[in-house]
Length: 317
Image (tube, rainbow, N blue to C red):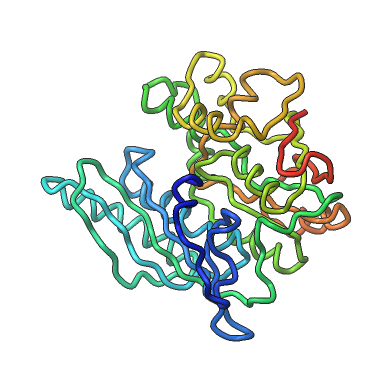
């Protein structure tokens, strides 16, 4: 993607506060001194069989980009790829699930676009509001800060196991609950206490999104492998030989920016894995950690720190 984007001419618009330059979660466009628009779009292929659940997961995933910037999501457009001979009732359940999550987030669905495709795809284009003086990007991490992760990782591996009918004994309920939990509360707490940077963890995996943050902020990041929260069963699945496609894709894309110490291979693979509707990686001064954990309504964990050494790179220990 970076190679493709390099072909584009620079956009010269002084009101474009956040654009393509930092690989951030959403674009931000200034309307006035007190108001800017946060704008994002995303599209997913089904990760579960239940169409209603898939709609909820996809909407949660799409709206997360607004929350990661500290914005308040407001308007959404459905984006749907659906086979011409497909069952309309399935599409209806997908849209119903997406709308349920949109309503929970305070997002009004005001239309959308459907195109004919071989397989099903669903997502949202979302617009939110934000104060241009209070934008949270991935480009302001500071040496000495620590990193909090608000949801476990391992979704890609667990979803791959379900597709291969090898998910017997896994507690999928806890995974689905995580994937359908909005990052709303985490975003609200970020805004209340003030943080330096944030990003949500999705297709590029924990490693990929942290590498992007290190590059955008011109800092190093030290990731503590033993502290990363992981969904139960994900490590055992990798040990059994289940390697989802996102792992190799992300290793190919980001491994040159990663230095690893002596960590188990299954952990190394897992942190490169694709996540769907993952949590927020929040960067803040160490003195604010307890305040965040007290106000955040779910479990979260400190997983690393920001350093001045190794700018643009991730060191896993």
